[in-house]
Length: 408
Image 1 (cartoon, rainbow, N blue to C red):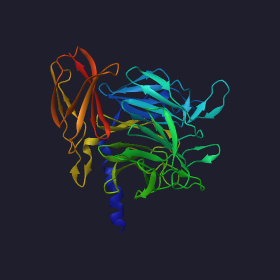
Image 2 (tube, one colour):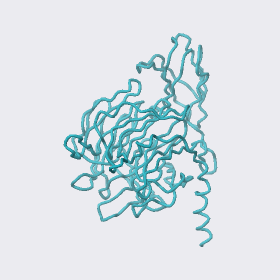
Image 3 (cartoon, one colour):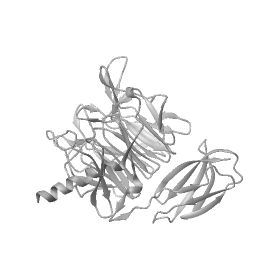
Image 4 (cartoon, rainbow, N blue to C red):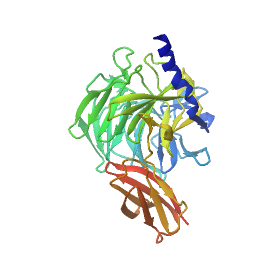
């Protein structure tokens, strides 16, 4: 029995080499609780609590990452002010971010927030949307799904919460939904796959209880169901994403609210309701890191391990993912040529390449071409003028890919 256990523990550690180090952010922006996201081939990270010589303080700094030159560039700061413990997600090539703790530089007060902001990368601007008519809070769950944002849980000065809200992006309006069915908690993990939203783990109210339980929310009938728990220790304050029909949770603190021995990486299969451990990222697991998926690579950024801020940024090639021993085909399209002149070829090797459509938009976000496509299509574009465009691929669930293309 001991030998089997040792082998199980050894295998993930031996696969750490599958993670590759890339450029770090400036040393003045070592953070926890930042929001990371990727749109149109560019990565972004905003806000979070920044390490300074005087301690850790909220920040409004905003950076973008260019993978082709492996470089970070500072942008204009988040207009909602210095912000820690906020959260966000992406829908239809725009990012949504809010909540958390705002630090007022004038009064020195820390203020719980219930606001919501939208970032448009085409104009590099933020606009404030309607705030949630709910209790302000820090580190709640926050998931975009089929044109809506689902937000709930988290905590504030009164303690942990379990309420659940839906925000309609089109109508800019909020409505309360059925409460999360288990213990109140903060800093859970969350993602959306297919028709469902998944939420779980996190830090509860009962002492230092940290959960390993996992739940599925059905927006159609506003119901919750407990599904398979992770076959490992409970965890809190990590990061997560969905990709190619699977959900992934990455890093975080373990059941003792300390860094785990490894930077654990797990895949959730919604069809089988099962978990599979993936190769750990280098070093100990991180508390409150950021992440995004860019050009089919998952990135882990910043966070802290055993109260020491981590500056190294790593990426993992999602092409390495297998399922039941078979390599998972990527849903990312191959666009060629790029730059283009008269025609664009789109090839998608994913098993589910039916009911697809594409939009080609200009830099103002206006749709110039819209058409149905298959897994292997050719689009005439000779009438487009020279310049930068974005090609978007959609399936029945919505946008699945967006890439920048250049007309010569």
